[in-house]
Image 1 (cartoon, rainbow, N blue to C red):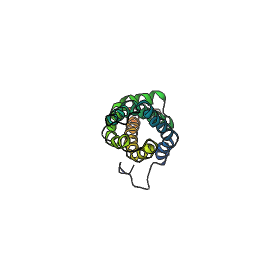
Image 2 (image 1 turned 30 degrees about the vertical axis):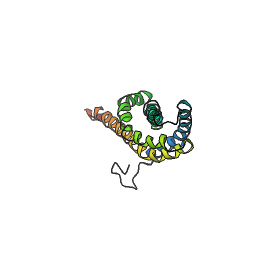
Image 3 (image 1 turned 180 degrees about the horizontal axis):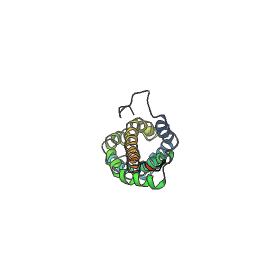
Image 4 (image 1 turned 90 degrees about the vertical axis):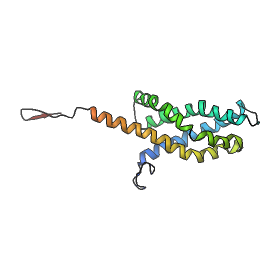
Length: 166
């Protein structure tokens, strides 16, 4: 939120809580199992396995995780499933390609240097940057939808006699 220009003591606490709750309840456990699964699927330790694992990570896992994060965030904001799906549809590829600007480089270290038992810790450090990006995308879409909804609402006031109708 500081990245978006908000003063440090004017954070949207609800937004921070939602993102933290998702990270605490979903990201850690799902990522732990994913990294172990990735090692089972690609057990090779040769140099060429690093880009293969990074490519798998940035297609299958990234798409799945971004979807889980975005849907969970939408439900925590009490949005309808149709609204969540619509926003997910419009942000899926921009989020995925935004990840390609950060994660392939981070995953050269993840899969090339960091032992599997420490990968989650390393990725969690990089994840701070990534969640800032995801949260910004999600918040921009949510605020744009709210502004769009309010601009299309009929706010004219009609008077019939002395009675006011909205």
